[in-house]
Structure formats: structure tokens, C-alpha cells
Image (cartoon, rainbow, N blue to C red; front, side, top):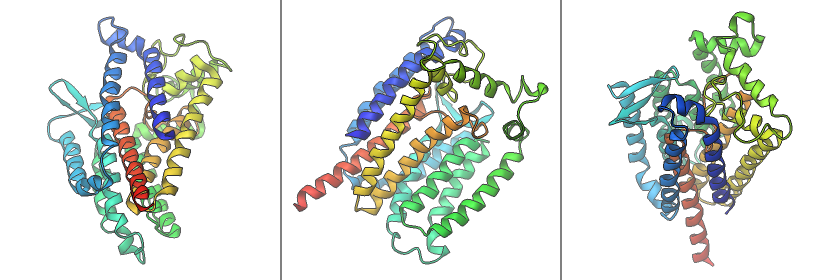
Length: 365
């Protein structure tokens, strides 16, 4: 299957790039151990891939049955960020630490929200006759989830979650005119929220007006060094492992800006291959969406498409300077155990729905 093969290839490719991009920061933060971050990410992949394959064998009705419980658990985990277990990383209060293990609950909340939206919207797929039927109950619960993430100042994750909600409504058959109105309101709110923070507003200013000399060591540093890294790779790159940017020049080279390291080491060819892989993943997911007759399966698969592929292209757009820095990782490739596990769980759910659909078709023939 296209979706499974492309996903596994992206994860394996990601591990190679994690080994390269994280080696210096790993050595600096782990007493000279160049491989600590890579080994940890490899362990996450080793655990998550079998889980993905296992849940792919579950029937579609399992996800509908447990959707409400899942979203409540997701909201509960996100609440832990604010009641003593949470800590700040990268300016965001969106992480928890338990017994030496860290996690980002919002990654799992994304998946829970998608499955829950699929459940409640599938029952209303033919009933979007007015604003009430469109908004209730999907939007209030979604706003609670997104609001909790915004309370932690994580605009990037919140933006992806908003896109997921709008995408789920689209795949549920909501009128485009009303979706456009909702998107307009969200856009205005997003701009106001971004301007409420000096760090976020300075990123927007740099994006709109370019870098001033006084901004170089502040808002411009990551953007400029990301551009230099991406551009210095040329057509074929400087060679795997030979990045100069990862030597403390490019912040978050192994996470939010790993695509810049890919472009530096593997050149335009390597960067284009990554983009092509996400296009192939898009094609595979769209084919599944079009094949689903069940609204629930269509909405959930569409939500996962918006999440993983949409976030991938947002990440790339940030590195290319097309949009301001948002702080979202490159799915399936960047360092991050929570993000990798949640993404693979989401693909497992998609495969589960596809398998259930094939089984139903086989029974009717």
C-alpha cells in the first residue's frame, strides 16, 4: 500500500537525517555522546511502527466506539501541562515530564480530536442546513482543545489543529461559503493572537520587512542561517553528515529546521525527493478518501491528511521563508518522540479504516 510504504520510508529516512543533524547538539547535551538523540528517536520508531501495524488490524467500529473517551483523555493529558507536570520548552508551555520521561500531549490530542470529529460529524453529514448544525457540537469542543494549546503559547500546534477542524468539516460536506467565513474569522483571530506577543510579532516583522542589523542575533538568526544552510547545498549537497549549520549555527537543526539540513547535505535533489514523498503520501491518502463510502472513514482520513501533509508543507514553507516561523516539526522526519508516535498511530488508524472498508466490500461481492 502506498500510504504504508511511504510512511515507513519517511521514518527510516528521518532517522538517517536525525543522526546527522543532531550529532553536535547530542554531544553537547549528553556528555560527548553523539548518538544519544538518534538512539532515542530510533527507539521511538522501533516501538511505534509495530503499534501502527497492530492497530491497523482493528475494525473501524473500534474507533467510533472509543472516540469520546479518546478526546476526553486527550483533553485530560493537555490539562496536565498546567497543573504541575508541565514545563516550558522553546517558549511554549506545552510539555509534561513524568519520571524523567517527557511528552507533548497536544500531539496525541490532535489524533483524538480527529477521531472524535469523525464520529460526531459523520452523524450530521447530510444535515448542515444552518450554522447551529454546522457548529454544534464540533466547534465548542474543538475550541476547548485549541484554547488549551494556545494557553501554552503554542501557536504553531494550534494552527495545525484549526486546519484539522476546518478540514474535517470540509470532508463532512460543510458548505464552502460557511467554511470560508469561519476561516476568515480564524485568520483575524490568529493575527491578533500573533501580534499579542513581542517574539511572534518580531518574527512577522522580519518576514514582512526583512532583517535589520539589530535583528541579526535575535529574530533573524534562525531564519538567516536556515536560508544559508538550504542554499549552500546547491544541486547535490555537501554530503551526508557534512552540514556546517548543525555546528551550533542553526537552532533546532534536528527539529523545526531539519529540512534546511536536508537541503544542505543532500542538495536540491534530496530536498525535492522529500517533497515528492509527501506528494506520494498525499496521493495515497486522497485515493483512500475517494474510495470511502463511510463518512466517518472519509472524515478521519481527511483529518490525518490535513495534519501530516499540511504540517509538512507548513514546515517547508517556514524554512523557505514563505511564511513566518511557527515552530512546527517536519512530520515523520524531525526529532520528537511524541510527534513520531502520534503520527504513526494516526497512519495506523487510516490503515485500519482502509482495511475495514476492503473487508466490507469483499463481503458484499
